[in-house]
Image (cartoon, rainbow, N blue to C red; front, side, top):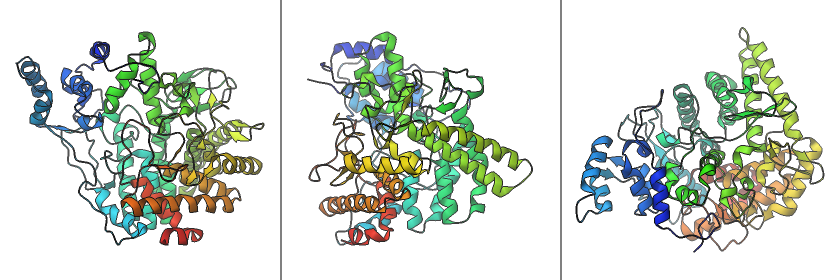
Amino acid sequence: MRNRCGVSGAWCAGLLVLAFACRPSARQPPPGRPSAYDPAHDIGTLFADVQLSGIFPDSKEFVDARPKAAPAAIAARYDSARRANGFVLRAFVDQNFVLPAPAGDGYHSVAAQGMVAHVKALWPVLTRSPDSTDPRSSLIPLSQPYVVPGGRFREVYYWDSYFTMLGLVRSDRTDLVKNMLDNFAELINTLGHIPNGNRTYYRSRSQPPYFAAMVGLYARATDTAKALPYLEALEKEHAFWMEGAEQLTPGQAHRRVVKLANGVVLNRYWDDAAEPRPESYRPDVEIGQTVPESLRATFYRNARATAESGWDFSSRWMRDPKDLRSLETIDLIPVDLNSLLYNAERTIAALRLFRHGAGDSAVAQRFNQQADARRDAILAMYDPKQRYFFDRRWRTGELVTDRPSLAAAAPLYFGIATADQGKNVAARLEREFLKPGGFVTTNFASGQQWDGPNGWPPLEWLTIEGVRRYGRADLADTAAGRWLTLLQHTYKTTGRMMEKYDVVNLRKKAGGGEYPTQDGFGWTNGVALALCAIAAQTQACNN
């Protein structure tokens, strides 16, 4: 058989030996960590034994399960019980844990409902009430209601939420947008950043920093004054991404910042841990067994950093598109990440000037100067020969021109590209990436979910609205029409909104990844409503 890292190998005793070495040990919560349950470190050997046993095909199910007793007591009970004859691991888990249900479980679409009405009816289904503090749950509690994506994604997700909010605004639910912004500000103020999701096992990483874009969306939907309460949180999040920048010398990196040889400071994706992801434990360990021990921690760090990017996984991050062991995420300066931080710097500067209090002008000037320098660096990530934006390897300075992707749309969406660059990128997107169902993420068929033939709602939105911003309304409307027609067809056939779609073969389901394609689905719903609000898409949305 072939495993997902592209090398021969079966699930075997060698993996179990390796897994023993990978077992997370019990440890004290680090300073500032909430006293919530951390499954990878609070139940001893039981965690790895369950995750590697295969009783749960999806590793996330067990980390979302709630212990029925104190984790330490269950760990001690397990150490004793597993030595008995006739011990059954699954029975032990069922006796000691409450397994989670999928978000939206039990909801059935109404056959007579059109897609738009269905999406609006899903908001209450995907909305969680404020959480109560539960020391036996891996959930980090949030004090306001929030929307989850659906399916296995039972918690809020950072970058998903921006695209969900697009639809909430179109549904006149700015109240729920505000609730979610309040939750994110609370996470920044208590944890120092917005984690990947509100779970303890996500605390070591963030996700693409869309908080500033969310605040901007809310300000446009209401008024600018209502964005001011989030200014402090915006600046704290920016400090999280820039931590350590002042101590760097050219050619160095620290956490999420790198300093190029010319002295410009840019950002990369990172994770503060270098061990298997708890929610993807078995797949990570499976690949880890094939990596030399001296490189194993780097592989885990790269896998986690890729999860922070949201594009987990994609040939974009791999030197060999067929081999996940070749991940080089922490060695890359992503063009879309830096476009997001450019937007954050401009947003902070604009809100400081709008407030116009003591010292605000000086702070605004500093953030605008940072944004100017970052914009120049992003413009230099455009290759004039290929007429496209690419990620850059920060150690060597070379652009990664052999792996083009929809990440090139980010400088268009945020208005960074020059007019000529925008025109040229749009032309290449039309020529190479526009497929029968919309824009394809990459043209590599690697088997990874963030590659062809898949199209993803957030990237469809960024690309469609990016080319529209640079004068290609015709291309934007064509792509939006194809995407919405695909969504409509899938909805009529299945009654569901899916997480991702095959945009090349419209008769096939999207595939790839570490878990089955999910339905629900927050960002699909949000982007669908936002695109349906564009006049040119009225027919596609009403069919």
